[in-house]
Length: 345
Ligand code: AMP
Ligand code: MG
Image (cartoon, rainbow, N blue to C red):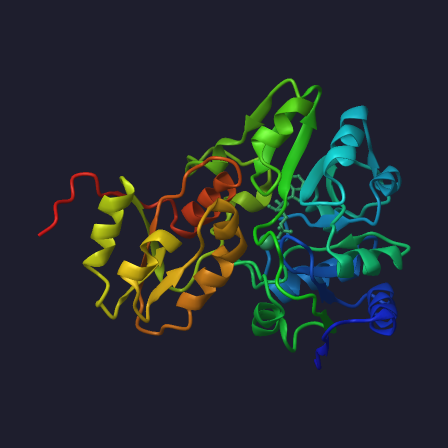
């Protein structure tokens, strides 16, 4: 299949994209979190094409993208807490899980009786959704298991020849996927951490409960609340290992591998100068910056054919740091090396 790419899409490209979607085709588009792989969310055949293009397991449901929070009424049973969250965080990087209405096909929800809804804020996503008289079901536009795409180049790498159209919208500003919450009475359960942090959600709920799958590997009989969180994710080809210990100890541990052709290093701005090499990637000065460039950094190691292991500091779990921690821990299969006892030779 020939994939049409629209750089800087204007009105006519967006109108074309809507007709592709309406006809059951697939269009990748930018959002403020990551690029999405869009399909008509009421068309079960189009949803099946999304799973096929990504190689995504069919029990991993898709998020419906809407132009405005009120459109949720057509697809789900809403509640006052949904509207409080909508007022505070939509449009923006928050996904809310609600009980679904029958109009939403089971193929979209992976057979669940709930549906995930989100109102993105990226101008291209908004311009596209405004023109759609249907919700757009869109998972991240990557091959399943690979880091999510945050530039049009990443989407082209994974989806060229497999989908009808790609809309460019520059680099995604947030860089990690949306925060996902489920409403349970007055409580909120956090199913996936993102730019809307537990601290930001706390004023709206009696309790913000953190799904254990976000912070540790699950035992064989445990299931995460978001089916997608059970799969290995975000991983580059190399094995990722997280280093736990104080900053200087971690940096001196990494220093040993600076000249090793088989090891890649991920570091913050403060230590980049000392650790700089062809295989060292700097992912920012603070947690927000790290979230923004995390997936591009992980993808960069795939361009270093000899690198078989990547070392990165264990991120802090404060604020958006929890989202960075969760993605990196999953990329590393939760493998953490404690370097506290490491002594410089
Ligand atoms: P992606 O769009 O690739 O970022 O993945 C969507 C994420 O949302 C996956 O982790 C899904 O498991 C999760 N998700 C979507 N719908 C639901 C739902 N109804 N209940 C729980 N999790 C959901
Ligand atoms: Mg994804």
